[in-house]
Image (cartoon, rainbow, N blue to C red):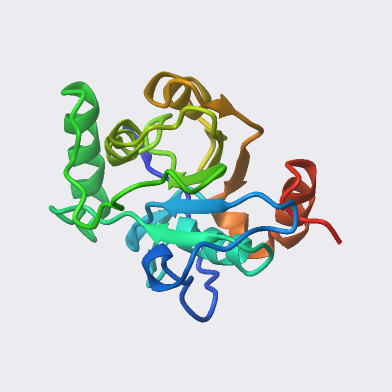
Length: 206
């Protein structure tokens, strides 16, 4: 396609929903640290190997489920007050407007605090080289001082995009750790990559 691309996606899906942070007490990983996985994901019509496909489950949600099945963490799905369209072109156009305006889309279900967590995994697609602007809304809402933040992205070709730089700016006082970037088309086959990354950041010990 021509123009701006949002995250590349695959038809791979995972069964079951990731447990939400509000549904259970804070859990502690095998490393002894308290981990929050907060992610934004969009289903619907998506980019796929130069074309389009329709996803019932967005790629970032598939990746978030994969991570949450392998480590002890609390999971929070970030939802927009004004939900993003299932239509690919409409979402691309909205994302361009939000990036150009440096917008902060409102979050429908914000967490009251992230104070109890030591590590925060921030998951999102990459749209036009950066995370959707709602991720900046989330990051700027909380105090990340003393925490470690790991970007987690699904993408078509941009890897982590500008997330390392952006989270360093919007999460002052945080340590920005190693990120994980998985091509959308390959997210269903990313088990080994995910496990290797989780070991490197000290979240998985097996």
